[in-house]
Image 1 (cartoon, rainbow, N blue to C red):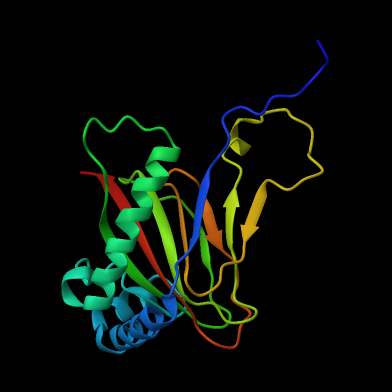
Image 2 (cartoon, rainbow, N blue to C red; image 1 turned 90 degrees about the horizontal axis):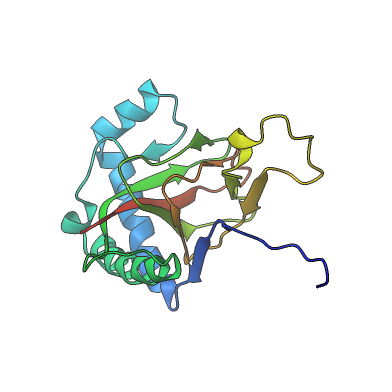
Length: 199
């Protein structure tokens, strides 16, 4: 038999370009910017934790019940999370992935989001409302990195970046470490992040 190399246990990232997203994005942008002005608790959290820009992560947990654009986005997330779960070959025993939290991120020029994972979830993701030219990508870390022990340095990076555009939906398993490097765009990079659990 001829020598060959097999690739085992790949890390899957789900990406979809949502058709007809322009109208939804305008509504989500208006709703996100309005939140960034009204949400005093969220602004205080951002200031306390050195988060440039605005996030509703620590202040509002019912966006889909508050606003129709967020409710429409949640339905889109549910449909795609179900497809991704099938690709991952999960045995859900009659359950399905459900979005249990989503939050707004308004990242101005110079803002970033350090490396992190999403605990207490099975799937996480981001929907991009605006992604102006120069907007920072999302960067994923090779999950094997901490297990390489005495392995020699690799010629390829342990990081992979993906540059989204407005209307892009991305999903990954919540244990996958990721970050958002410095936003170099002059305009705000607006995204809606979310977590899914099995319900």
